[in-house]
Picture 1 (tube, rainbow, N blue to C red):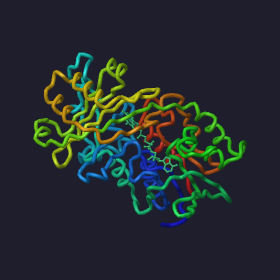
Picture 2 (cartoon, helix red, strand yellow; picture 1 turned 90 degrees about the vertical axis):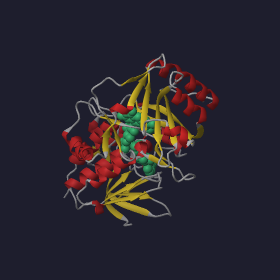
Picture 3 (spheres, rainbow, N blue to C red; picture 1 turned 60 degrees about the horizontal axis):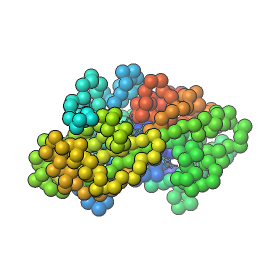
Picture 4 (cartoon, rainbow, N blue to C red; picture 1 turned 45 degrees about the vertical axis):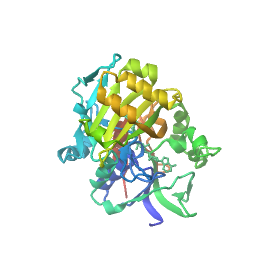
Length: 371
Ligand SMILES: Cc1cc2nc3c(=O)[nH]c(=O)nc-3n(C[C@H](O)[C@H](O)[C@H](O)COP(=O)(O)OP(=O)(O)OC[C@H]3O[C@@H](n4cnc5c(N)ncnc54)[C@H](O)[C@@H]3O)c2cc1C
């Protein structure tokens, strides 16, 4: 690994990958390093590979992708090749809605919902693969950045083993080290982005730091169940099925959706997504199973699956999706300090989540000039 890059991007989720791929298409000769705290690409749209049972692999974050009717030409250019090669597939027929009487119906809407195959993390890989000169995009995983420094017009970040890496430009693809939530998560007393700048030194950064504490996130908790009985899973017709719960069920129980993802050995992972603007109450596991059995009592196969399901893990997404006070896109780049920002925390006109993350990254990559 080199010790100097043209760009360092903090994060390797969909915004970082879209930014790197798009910038590389425009400027194939510049070097970009993506530094990620996790073990693999994808961020909130990632896939988990079990360390205990090597067979198990499933999407425990963003389960599917939808785009608004205002999808941009730039995003279409990135996703159409994936749709044509069936790496991004329309799963609208594999999504059902459960109403408050426990009845399952098809999703009656013309909107398409996609899933990346074989797993959601592959979407990020495929976006990076579309770059022109991929050897100029490098990754550094399992590296959590807790501080950023700027000296003599260069950015400097400390990575593992007391090593420092420098770059002329720095991109934050996550709000984390600028948002007050990082104080608890990183166990620091001050914001790393604030520490890098004296107040008054950079107006863009000052405005961003003023706006960002207003940003609130939807909390999501995922209960991960495993069904090992291959004979039983065989009776389940779908390789993949997503069921969204009606608003009444969601309000009452916090159950947002449930996903059935068949594994390569024929066993099954079931992911129950719970969400709430405030905190999600801890629910006793036996009660979850009992509630699911009661909700699905009209459908024998689901009752049988839940009766055999064992909880293997829980995943807390304390900041799964920004809810309000998104930041104005004018704050995405400061040419004074060569620092940029992208992700779903920017207001990208009538779209949200993954689409706004991609849109903000493409906008930022287009803004940059190089000499
Ligand atoms: C369970 C779940 C369900 C969701 N459902 C929907 C949905 O239905 N519709 C929708 O539109 N969106 C949904 N989302 C949101 C969607 O996944 C995100 O909008 C999208 O993935 C954002 O991508 P990103 O690259 O901007 O951010 P991220 O994916 O968060 O990427 C940022 C990356 O930066 C890394 N990072 C952060 N700080 C540091 C640091 N200091 N050092 C090193 N690395 C760092 C993080 O590990 C992360 O990998 C959901 C998210 C979750 C978790």
